Image 1 (cartoon, rainbow, N blue to C red):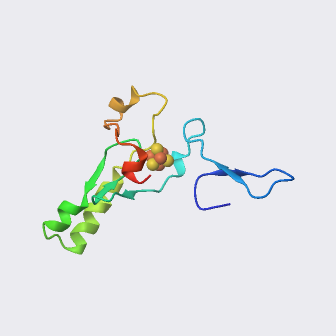
Image 2: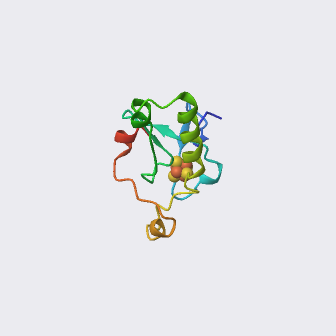
Length: 108
Ligand code: SF4
């Protein structure tokens, strides 16, 4: 139901449904195929980490469509396997820098 990772519930006697995204307690990273393009042209690979590629810089340097595609392909191979919201010590182990911007700044 729906297009996102939410789990929906409805209650008898009430209209509509409520969606819960329990990203910390019920990780769904193993099925995540999402990447995000920020308003600044940065292709983010995961909400928790800074990892990604500056597509704006690449485009403004005159890269061809094929070069942009290849850069995206290479970046996506580095998509983190999952978040570690509940154990930040793991960030160093997986070699990723934690994202410090809020969701409103990312578009997540
Ligand atoms: S934390 Fe990263 S890998 Fe996990 S669901 Fe969110 S974007 Fe996908």
